[in-house]
Amino acid sequence: MGELALVQSPGVPDSPVVTVAPGWALGAVAILGALVLVAGMLDGALSARSGGGPGVGASGAARPFGEAARLMRQRRRTTVQADTLLWRVGGAGLVVTAALMVAVIPLGRWTIFDLGVGVMWFNAMDVLVWALVWLTGWGANSVHSLVGGYRFLAHGLGYELPLMFALVAPAIAAESLNVGTVAAVQDGLWFAVWMPVAFLVYLLGVAAFSVWGPFAPALGSDIAGGVRAELSGVDGLVFETGRYALLAAGAAFSVPMFLGGGAGPLLPDWAWVVVKMLAVLSLLVWLRRRLPAFRPDTFMEVGWMVLLPAVLVQDLLVAVIAVWRA
Amino acid sequence: MVADIAFWGLGLVAVISGAAVFYVDSMARATYALALSFVAVGLQVLFLQQNYVGVVTILMMVMEMAIMAVYMVMFMGMNPALTPMSMVHSNRTAVATAVLTFLVLAAGILLVDWPTRRGSPPPEVTVSLGEALMGPKMLVMAVISPVMVATIVAGVVLAAHRTRYDRFGDDLKQRTPEDPQRGGVGR
Image 1 (cartoon, chains in turn purple, cyan):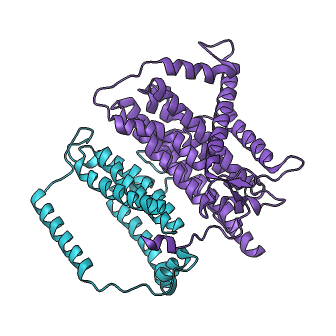
Image 2 (cartoon, chains in turn brown, yellow):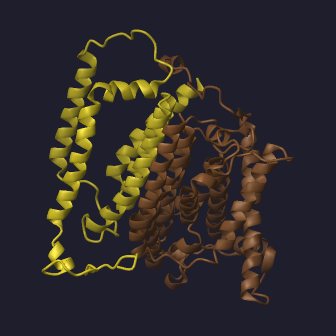
């Protein structure tokens, strides 16, 4: 296999970011964990406020801790002829996918995995969610969770192409699929400002692949919790953590793609990245209660008749501007 | 060294999970065994420095398998294929064909006088691959794409039993189409 060594890594010529030692991956996972906790606490506080009065068990900002303690003590539920392998792969895969997304997101000047096609990598990871959510629904051998899995795929057909073309816009403007380069070329004018349609569709896509807010019918109470109907104990905890982690990773990826990366006055660039991540994440958590659910059976038409043409026109405008500037 | 072991390990995963497609007894397992096989191949392609091709392989194949699982469960075997079922049929013909194909391909590998490498790989492998594949045939590719899309659209139109007259009335004057599945943009 000497040929492998002969092909020198093309890497990313004059990359604007520095690749740190692989051990820092633990640091990246820790940041992701902290974002999950913040999102969980904020969601708990918001749901306590909208519910009014104390709920059952831990509520408010303490809810994620109370929920974790409750689920870890819960006995694991078993179902008849469950496909346990696929079920566990699906449930545990979400949090792994979120960690793999974070690998290509630079924190200011530092990155763990400076991949030349980082934007495609993120896109491939968000497609993995299709498989994982459906497998979680399938594995339990239960009608309600399987219906939830199909609901998610129905949403997927509607949101995935608009999301892909939303990611195309910054890549065209930067003439690169490298995440660090996309962040670096936004000096002075953030992509969110002059490609707002792509930014909005991207945020909608993040909510969608996190089964969040308007895209939560796959977990709907009308089908007894859908995909997670039969999840219990630590399996349920891991699945929920995975959803929050995907939401956090999606929010984090929007910073280099649309919000200028670490650009900002006074604070160091890594601090600006964290501030922007928290802002986008809080917005997504807050929107959960502000938007109506998209019905899985009719969302396809919204995706293909409204979102897809809108984002394609956005891409065309960005391409024309990019050619005109060059 | 580590890269070599990882490369061959991924190759092993790809072959074994490819074989598992025919060994397992559930449509979901068969579909996702195939997905795993493709993911392993995609990761191998990353080792060959074809980063774009590798990541796109993973992306497209996982998406395709997620959709294929739905169709497999819907249409295959005892309908619906929610119960355990065999993934093989026509065993004798299949075994004979497989053995014969293997022998022919293996003989080809051993008998062909393989050329030795001239020069070294260019720095941008993906770019040169794209130019080698498409470069002089770009016009052909550009023509084929719309023809293929037109074929797909024509196929769906011919296969659908409802026509525009069913949707928009006999004189095509109805403003909103009458569809069994209403859409999400007010139609």
